[in-house]
Length: 98
Image 1 (cartoon, rainbow, N blue to C red):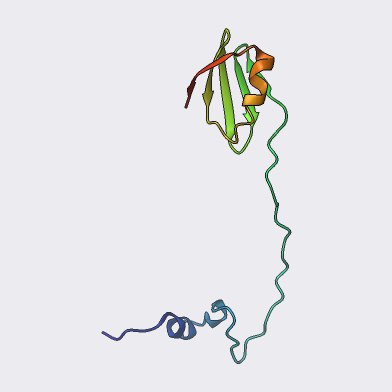
Image 2 (cartoon, rainbow, N blue to C red; image 1 turned 30 degrees about the vertical axis):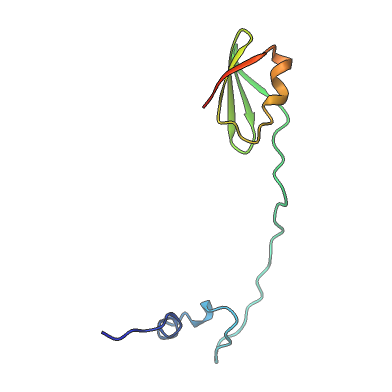
């Protein structure tokens, strides 16, 4: 069995352009347009009321809050932005974070 380097394998398969920084004869370099990256995530600022005691906050993930009186249960904590809304809903104690 003959061992072949990754680079020589790619050359034989016609994919030598996939090796960064290695100029190849007969290949034309293409300019690749770079898209701007999002520098940071901005969580949704609005808590959506889905039903009488169920709320949704679009954060790093969808965060759900189930309310029972002044108690709450949080599903998927996200960035923790949900904590800013608890007192406005009258929640004084979070029993579970799932």
